[in-house]
Length: 110
Length: 261
Image (cartoon, rainbow over all chains, first blue to last red; front, side):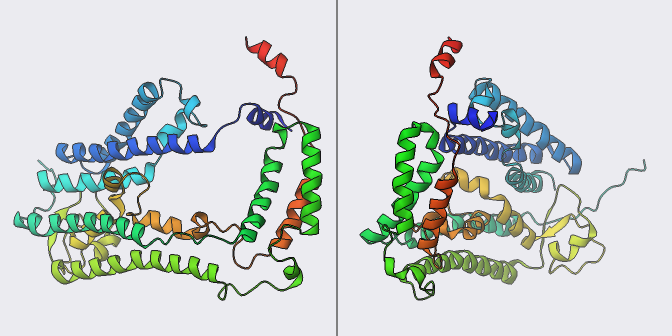
């Protein structure tokens, strides 16, 4: 048994809890990505600026999750630590962002 | 001075109220409907007969013993292992021990397999029917309108898809017709459904496709149709036999606790 397996046996990780945690994170991300889309549409951002806005926005939300929801200790709640928080649900978030972005861009600007 | 101004098109604001909002509302309501229809159509898994349950639970017992072997002392593990290996090899937990050497039954004739297949069919219907109906509806009523401008540029290749029904050759690809708003809704409404229906909803189509891949996951049948339980028992007995490494987690627990204090 190598050291990593041994560690897992001595300090076991419950997979159900991990799944619940990542669900909470992806919920927060999908909500925030829709709201970011609304903001980007109202600001009238176009092409690269909009996607840059989304990236910065998700990074900001991730830092908020890590500092407030997880109390600054992400490795307690997910195996990959803060990387899991940022990478959670990126593709789904982008689609939600594009949807609300397009809608509000159309309503406000075009 | 030389600022390039994009194409400007003057549109009737009524387009928003009569095309954009109806499509969005219909898409959301279809998702909600699909969620509740899936809940209604899901037939509860049939209770299995006692011997089939015994067969499955003993198989799970073997797997659990193997994965959690380090939680019990070596003596307990060995006695359990000996008992299970002996029972697995003699086939005393099998549903019908006589069927050991027969070829596996045709999955079509197995009533349990039919049940699983019906469930899959229902899931497929729930996805395909609304999709075709809504696409037909949008094509019949709303084709030929330019309704909105995308906030990001696309390559010319998307023109035939996103401007279907609009026969204007020089128009910028950023102006799109109603069908593309339908596609945006199709992929982007997942987050909206998460607010309305909670995280485990059946409203989203991409989620439904993922679930189609493993229909086995939510049935209680452990042995899929066509799998021979006798062979799986033998394989599990072999797995238990070859497991030589055993390290009890409580070995050296005193030192670890003292080291942490």
